[in-house]
Image (cartoon, rainbow, N blue to C red; front, side, top):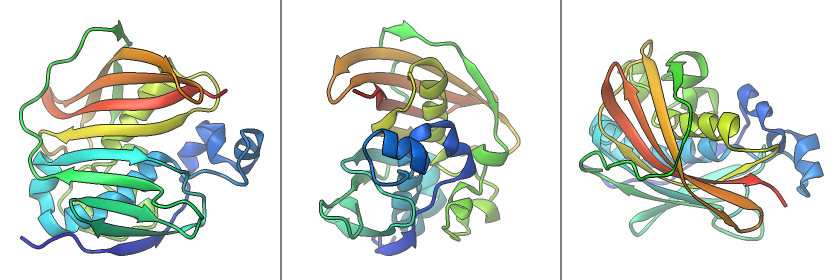
Length: 235
């Protein structure tokens, strides 16, 4: 198979992300930023493009990787997703680069055990609309793999972890900082995702942070697991 290749896109927020005020101009300014931050999961969607283009549905079903968000990507930024060794970095025209780093893996391995912690309520989310195959397309990426093969976009898994964080853990504006995302099976639009999570750690670091273990099943099959970190209360 081919190696990942660079590509670029103009970053944009999706309507549903206005639920978090940091993704609006007013909310971002209130938190000390110049304009709306693009959701980390959208930056992640952009970073997956080179991996999925190179490795296809096998990566979507069995791969994954770790993404770290170092600096915000802003609405309207030109984002260049550039392979750099075994990483793919997101680069914009802002002063500090890269903005995010993704280290993809071809095989995520077996489903890891959930660690003990604060058990969160289970969420049941239909895989349609914002949770479907066209996440990337709606965010400005016309890559047709997911819609042609009727496969849920891999950015939906951290988006569902964000949904759990937003509804059960965060207080006010919050920021997704990193995730380890493991794919275990393809999922098809139209099913229902069962999202279970545990807060395994809380600590201070530029605000209150939380680390979650998340497991996502569709029709009883584990499709993704995550270690998901966010600043859940800004200073």
